[in-house]
Image (cartoon, rainbow, N blue to C red; front, side, top):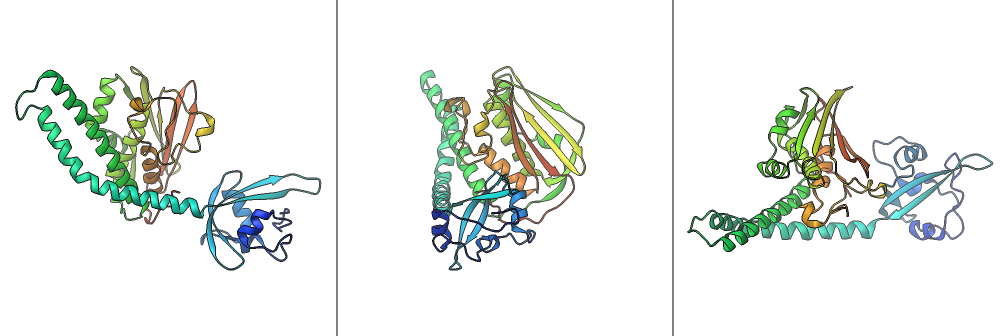
Length: 336
């Protein structure tokens, strides 16, 4: 396209994707090929430059026969002798979205069917390990403890899958109250506190008393996911720092660990489902790669933003910012 957004040429893939006549674009406009969000400005080109500049963002494409398809769109600026031109890369996401939908449906179904029997197994193992039915030989007791620990990890994975399904479905309604971040930190699960204590990892909190409008349970869950991630990647005896501050109607929180850091190529995908860094083996990670995805969903539900900063020699900082007072209408989330 030229600087005004007039389409000058398309490649053969685009012709096929949009159903355009071979070799020509005729009177086709950018607005006829991409469907703007309802609350977006009328100028498609300017909206693309604000939302999709060198970073893919989800859009809906429109074929010449009127049918729609999901796509990722990225726009680039190409300077030239006669002024700036723009190039757009469009990726058809129809198959990807369908595969993702089937995968989530499968995981949800399996998780619901597994949760009840797993709860019974976990309870039975716990009773046996505590000697309720009699003392066991030391080797047998050790194996029971290992089995119980792994049943807890499996139950946590199933709960994460179901939580993510609930968040993404738009069915979750937040119970807005005036919350203290310090109170939310005090609600961290005993298992996480025990893990930090066992590995001699210290939590240092910087910043005064900060309050915000939020759902108490979801806020505690958000902090739990970020701190669990930090703990999983922190060396024993290190410190995880939490910095909180309020400015311009926003509450900003940073969680910094002293782990191995995240490679630059991976920083854009750390919040994707089932993604895990390859710096530690699975026994050290202790998770399945859903914690940060859930954290992103909770932040989005509160109307905030989340991101990551990392240095491969100085650890990782996960940050999020939430509105201090705004209560937002909740609805379906698009996290694909």
